[in-house]
Image (cartoon, rainbow, N blue to C red; front, side, top):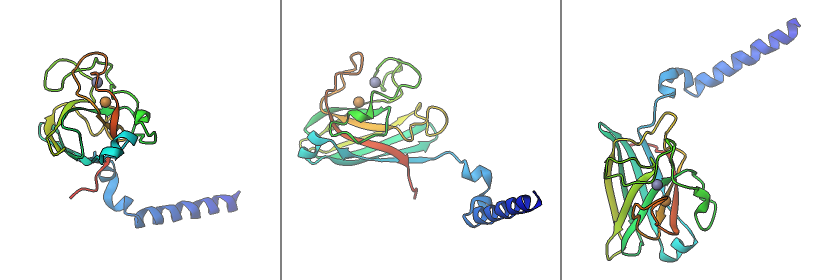
Length: 188
Ligand code: CU
Ligand code: ZN
């Protein structure tokens, strides 16, 4: 038993050295657990979106009044396109359906983020593409958390074929042109 416990002690000491060399101890537990302040989602076109050459990035940055969502997307058909955070950060299906339904951890009904009415947390409204197919979006959302139980990190983003008309249950925005996974950004 003595030998076994010595072996255990040696392993534990080795783990401490390894952890320290990785910077875990140098940063301390608070640094390691710090909430992300910036997240990024890079669009992956679905099968129908790929034909149009859709491309773009969405960033989520913690600001004083909430989370600033900035998107620039190219290759879209002119007009409004439903823009939501969906439940799953899963871009594996060619039709985008693996991303599941709207991210709705609070069990709300679908809604318009520009109104104060209840909404799915993932309801970001619409992005609007101009004649050149370029859509830009820049909004501060007071309710989108990047940490805690309802964190958006790891969930998905979907750009839809049609406009979100804020009808029930999910806005009638039709098929999916592109999906993305929200990940922690590398930072500045
Ligand atoms: Cu959607
Ligand atoms: Zn919704």
